[in-house]
Length: 154
Image 1 (tube, rainbow, N blue to C red):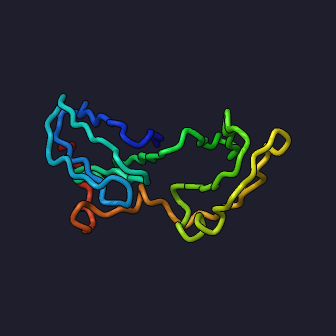
Image 2 (spheres, rainbow, N blue to C red):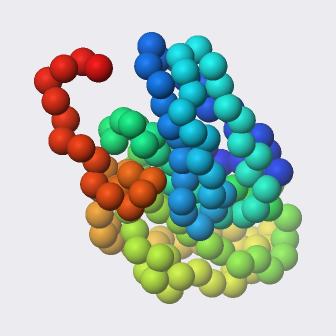
């Protein structure tokens, strides 16, 4: 997972000895880099806010997430689930939460306005329920299942 500011360029290098076809068809940045060979790279500009699930059309085990934000106030959870937002000045803010394996309706339900003051710096505990792993259970760029894996290396 990578969090980037809106307008950032992200490089997708192919460091393997075979072709890749990186794509994203989700609500963040939609793109299809087509086939590109070993030891080359492609770059994508993430020019709108959103979550982009990224896959390879050739290799179903490859996956990543790029979260594009237009705010500097965000945090990534630690292994124990805690999140720290640093240097947030006092004011009213909309708290939005994203988690890879949690349904959007659940995430939308916990979104809310929060007031940050010199004294009020704790946002409380949020409870999320996993609904499945999007990275492990995705379709190829044509919306179809990947061909079954073979024992051959290429």
